[in-house]
Length: 302
Image: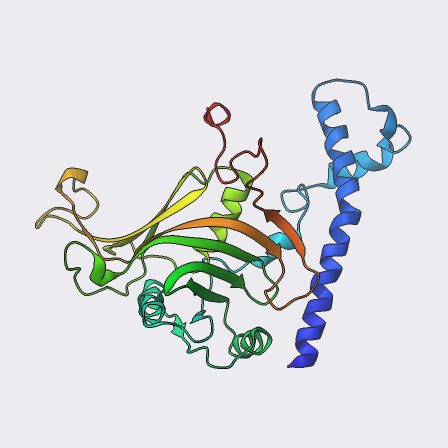
């Protein structure tokens, strides 16, 4: 098992190294194609290489037209294989964090809950890899209140770090929720239009298996100013209505809980137990001109 993990890690690092070498070539091909499409002169830095580049352009197809990145391989089986998610807590969790973990486990169909005990992160990740888990979720707390969530995709990342706030458990809701369904949920993502927003959308989407069309369970991740609001509902169609033809006003929504808000503050290109990983994005709240990371400005969307 250790030899296999070492070999897979070397293959992953080799693909990452090839990216940097191929990026320059793909950039030259892009500039040449742009010049040819617009009937403009070939850029001066490409003169002498244009004949060789034209041959590769003529041979390009849908598979080789765009550069294939190691990032594309991380979620190659998204929607093909059902995810296997392991959820756990930080050490010595409070009763409220343990209850939140139980409810969190029921959000992900087929997930496994594990008591942290004395496991260190390295042993925890090794255990998850040996059982072929696809993702590991670790929740943290401060003074008994859940305040952090780490989502690590296996075997080689990425790892997303979120802050949690406004956590409301099922028994804290104003109305008593019904028994929680464990069917595959429909997912609603709102406001994830920027590059990092699409990245976070993929990280969250990979935690859930594909939903069935006749399902009555829906989960919403709504982004507003880089704060992700999570809600969990079940819906009931009116009796006698044809499937898929009922009006929105006739559908009855019932909140199941829990509910919470998430704030992304770091994304790393590696698993949580790896050292010297590359940081893909980090929140810098004290920069005066930092733009929203998850959504494009309205003028760019239009």
